[in-house]
Every structure is written in structure tokens, then in C-alpha cells.
Length: 192
Image (tube, rainbow, N blue to C red; front, side, top):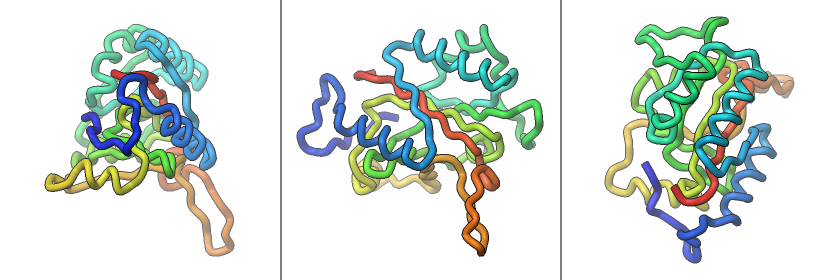
């Protein structure tokens, strides 16, 4: 799903580099990683390289327009499959691969309509969550997200801002306890 909500002055022909740069800055500030790609081939090669570097052989994905066209070529390089209904984390599945519905530049957050329990499992149980995002999906503020869904707000919106962070009563920060310890966004630049 692509956002039609754009802040005033958005350059719809070449994307908005200010929004993109703000999104990248904010996401990396909270420990997220961003890999920019300009073509599907570059995205697939980069994604396969990251998966190979992680030593990953099996990836669970959730159907989404951003990844559907990539799966066949990605499958030539790594095993990618849909989760079973009773999917649980295991040593075999270390990566969850999803698209995103929107992204918020002001916080570096990803927005996923997560009404399906399978999607929620894929975004929280593996140790690494990889997201494919198109530059045209980045909006400026949270208000833009709610404007986008005005009158048709989904039953479950998931906002993801960086890897999972948890602190105990002594304020000791731990990464990856209640969700993925790594969040990697493959950002497809330019208009889709």
C-alpha cells in the first residue's frame, strides 16, 4: 500500500530527499540499519549478501507488495518460505522478511498493518527483522499516518522504531530480548 499523504512541498517526481535523509538519520540513531538500493537487482544482491553474511539459510516472510516481486530471484540464493500457522522461533529461522505500509521520517519508524498474527510473529520472534521499503512510502509525521488511514483505520497498526530495546529496574538496557536485536531496512530509492 502506498501513501498518498505527503507534506506540502513534497517532490513527487524524484522523491523527497529531505524525508528520506531524516528517516535514515532517525532510524540509525536508534540502532536500525538502512541499505539504499536503486534497482530490484541491486536490492536482491544486497539482501542476499546480508543473509549470506549472517549465515542465514532460512527466512520467513509475510506477503507484501514490496517483497512479492523479489521472492523468486531471492529464492535462487536463499531458502525463503511462508510461516506455518504454529510458527515458533527456532535456530533454523533467524530472519523475518516483511514489507512496510508506511514509514515516519520524524522518528525513523516503520508502520505495518499487522492484523494477521503471522505478520506479528515474523516481526517479533526472529532475531533479525528485514524490511523492504520504498522511498515513496515515507511520510513526515505521525499525523500523516493517521491522515492516510482517515475513515479506515486498521484494527492493528504496528509502529517499529529500531531494534527491540528493554531496560530493567536498574535501567540496564538490553537489545533483542522482546523482539529482534537487529532491524535492517532495504530502502528502494526513487519512485516505484
